[in-house]
Amino acid sequence: MQVISTEIAEVKEIRPVRHRDPRGFFSEIFREAVLREHGIDCAFVQENHSLSVDPGVVRGLHFQTPPAAQAKLVRVGAGSILDVAVDIRHGSPSYGRHVAVMLSAAEGNQLFVPEGFAHGFCTLEPNTEVFYKVTSYYSPENDRGLAWDDPELGIAWPVSGAAAILSDKDRRHPLLTALPADFRYA
Image (cartoon, rainbow, N blue to C red; front, side, top):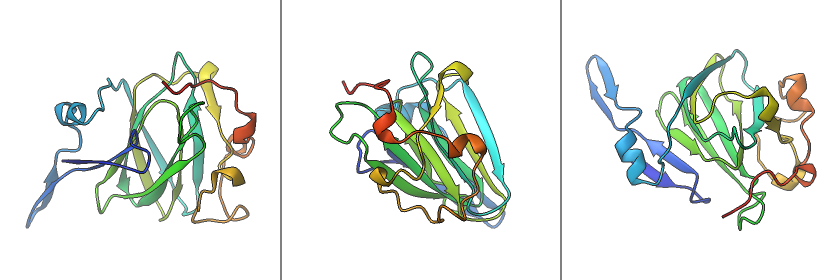
């Protein structure tokens, strides 16, 4: 299993090794000790699964505030996504910057998104299934979001605003400049 730092060091891409033979492949997709060796030392308490029928579905950008803040470990079981993590830690040298990684079932790669980052993705194929482990249970009181299309973020989404398929809730998230300082860089 390879653990690779991205442009923002706290966000990691994980590439599990696939052992192939005529039947298909076998892969360890989660190994706590390996992740811990690379600075990912957290306990995951819940795993979520989403299906997006159409390409161009945008989910996000989501996060939970303390004391229910979540780190996430994201992978794709079918299809592919552009997965995005935005640093929303006030005082961080990378505040407002993002990491964007294509995750796919074919590659089997994953993205670790630490607390203090807004997370979202755009589906690239029909019937895309996304699985993600989180370190805190879902908390409606702490559930927040950031506008996926905030021009200040400079995210090169693979879908236009007019073509993106979003929930009503995701259409109403505030811009980065309107977010309270829920996270501080330490």
